[in-house]
Picture 1 (tube, rainbow, N blue to C red):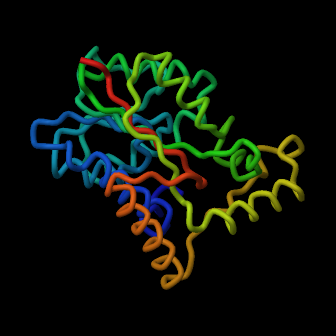
Picture 2 (cartoon, rainbow, N blue to C red):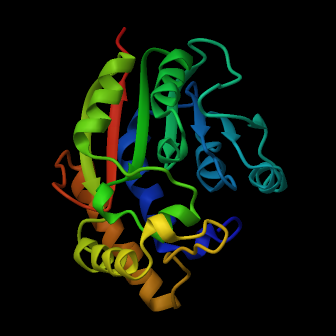
Picture 3 (tube, one colour):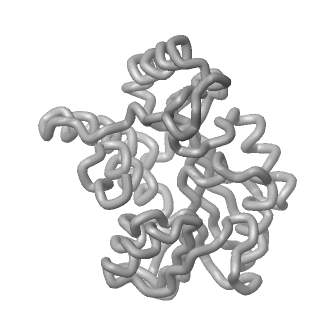
Length: 241
């Protein structure tokens, strides 16, 4: 998906939701680390508003970031961040913990590099029952329940401020696709080298319609109201002062 994120309703819609939640807290003096920055789509936008840093496990992702002219972007492991303690006011982490063998280490590292009072934004795929070859194609080892995410945050020392779902309106149809894929291609039998994602670029009008639905969800979430279910679980947590 590297280099194609602008054509995917999922990515643009989720960036809109993230902006609703943390945008009002970001200013010129903010220092933000995007863990799992990918090709730099989020960083490119955020870098216009604050100081930004990025880290990603994949060398090709870093190459794309550099092509965008992004600085302070390095290759590295989310569970062993090469940054100083209390360096950032914000840490964002989108669909990364699900790929870590030790997700608790990833959360602990975010806690370490955040300054007291700093904000941690996390979005991960929800409902373990929906694990399919899509997850395997993305090298994801798990999906999250609210209980697991809450436990991870609390064990690391975070105070949870918001926990909401997203991708709610489209959840019935998308969940049906994942369950059907799971039935036809049981994850335990899928060759990781052959696995493919069901997330793809859609025709322009359909892509725009799906993106608009996510943006409507973003307005709902941005108004302070949570969504009870959806494909994505979003958590906003704060490091105590």
